Image 1 (cartoon, rainbow, N blue to C red):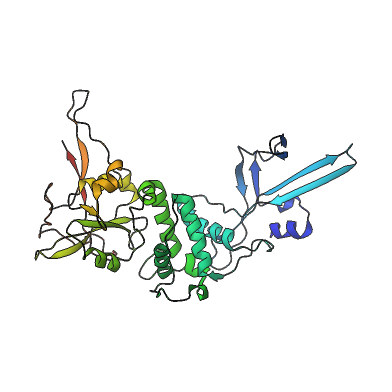
Image 2 (cartoon, rainbow, N blue to C red; image 1 turned 90 degrees about the vertical axis):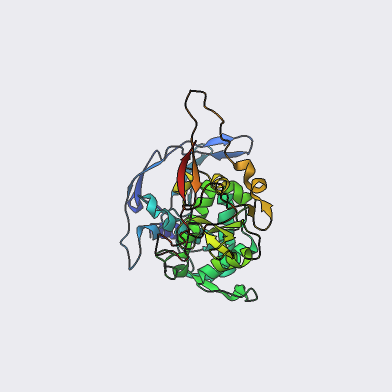
Length: 365
């Protein structure tokens, strides 16, 4: 590749360029505070790109490029000219937002596992799980402001390897491949482990950041484990978990009265980013009176109250104030604590991994 040629020969020519960049030159300025010279490229724009021929199943999201930075210095009266150059970390060029997840998989794997002395852009095909876990943890912390717990990482390990792994298993001896990471779909799913993780991370960064930082979202937990935890709790106890069946979805699981008046676990149809564009997660929780106590024993007002949206008592323009509220169909407003026996728990989506209850918006005066 061109990057390999530059690195090995220490020479560059315009013929090696893979693209055309506008506003790609600037003047080095001396920074007195740091005793360094630097230049900022504030308006660079990629105008053209020349791609290599793809091999096998390669896609544009797998193709790596690098920016070449170079400068010439004259010392003395010009009798000594020094040329300096450096390659950037790899970049991936995409043309549509739906290419973003796989592109970030390429960059994440390269940034985390490339050897500093490598030939561009070689990376290992498989790595020990603890190294990937560390990379995912750093990535999630940078995006959301809070690290993953040991339990979160255990869940991700099980998901990545497509099976339950006992806690006593020596994970240092477990290797995960690039294909397992972002190429092979998860069992009975149309998306990969990375696509699922990336969607959860994006949802949390854009819509769940504060509750996540406050530790109010368990998130990374299996459905069966959530059910077992809630069955030991009073009616109205709930928790939040990331959906297995929908990319970028978070669902509310709670314990309520079943049709036989015995405790039963219900799963609300997952909320997606489009739902939070209408109403925030805390406001959804405030609306649903079936939800009383955040697992294990925190009243929901104490947990989420500071994020509830204040509802004005009256408008100042002569109109009657209205607001959107979330309601489970078949459940009258103010019906807690009993969950009606005629509630439908059939999922509207046959691809879901668990029956779920749908919710809807009502306009309330």
